[in-house]
Image 1 (cartoon, one colour):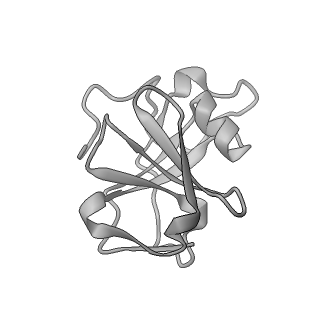
Image 2 (tube, helix red, strand yellow; image 1 turned 60 degrees about the horizontal axis):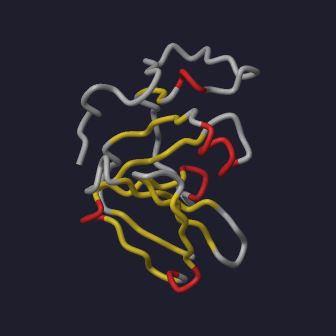
Image 3 (tube, helix red, strand yellow; image 1 turned 30 degrees about the horizontal axis):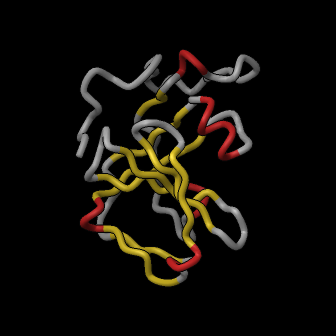
Length: 128
């Protein structure tokens, strides 16, 4: 499965919600947010599967290997959330903030000094 997007990401965020932990098998998920209008599936989209992970969001995954590919949400309907680990040639990425820190894994300590939000910020930066 291959995808492409033009330009730089809008934001890179670490999400610590329980749904992201379960989907990735890790303490958090790193999402690269790009405008849907600049994103496209190049090959393999027929293998793309999705499930409703919340009232607001749908997670996208590969039906062949099970890899988390991304997510879309009605909270930011103009953005594709790409799973950062799926980038073949990642640009230099800098995490803008941590989300849902109020429900993060108790065993994970955030030590990077990046801003933290217990949930979503009141107005997500550059929301689409």
